[in-house]
Image (tube, rainbow, N blue to C red):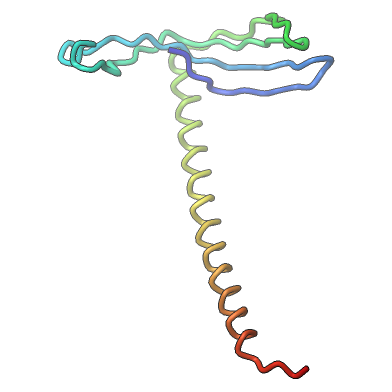
Length: 120
């Protein structure tokens, strides 16, 4: 399995994609073989690497191989991703709560305006 740990996109005469990838091997569980509906199994880290891929309007090529990552570096990157995702989810929950409060206030204002007499 491949996990994208980091990704950047750069517009050039085409597009550069700078990726940091983690590699994992899935070892199936004996109790949950494919005959029992499949298994996620246990994932074993194999390491990771950085690569830059160039897309010149549909023609893809690897322009550079970057650093090789240890499993510890892959694990740290995945922890950072989890922490960033949790922060993102918490921010979105706070934004929804604020927008709900604003929505309620806006509805209350409309009701008040609707109750005012028409003086035309």
